[in-house]
Amino acid sequence: MNHQHEQNLTALLKDIKPLLEIPDNSFYLYWGLIIFVSLLLLGILFFVAKRFWDNRKINLAKGYLEKLKTIDWKDAKQSAYEATHYARLLATDERRKELFSQLEPMLEQYKYKKEVNEVDHDTQNKFNLYVQVADESI
Image (cartoon, rainbow, N blue to C red):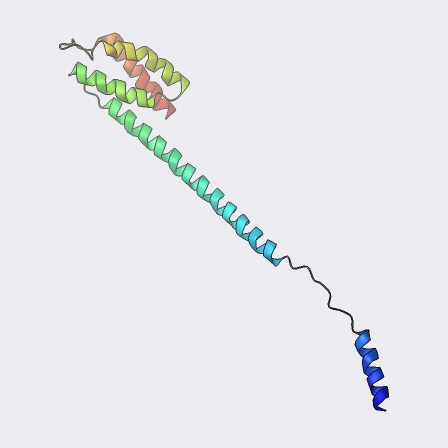
């Protein structure tokens, strides 16, 4: 009887299938999720930074424009330096670059001499046009 019991046990043991190999993708899922979240955060950070940068540039341009508007033309030499400096900083698009290229030589005559005359009407008009165009485009 003991022998019969061993045979049945052996038959049962032979009937047991080997363990199935289950593919484990959790490692790849884990790193894939980390990379996806990282790229998402980088994208969000990029757009937030770009928005701040664009706002900062607009605020700087508005500041330069205010400086141009407050130039006091009584001291022609100092005013010519200030006008050239801020107008150059604002000359970022084609229209303003073109106007600045016309305005700059007109301002140059007031910058390098020891004694300068008052700013003439042509220069004043060209400067006012530049300020008006800059004001409309900012």
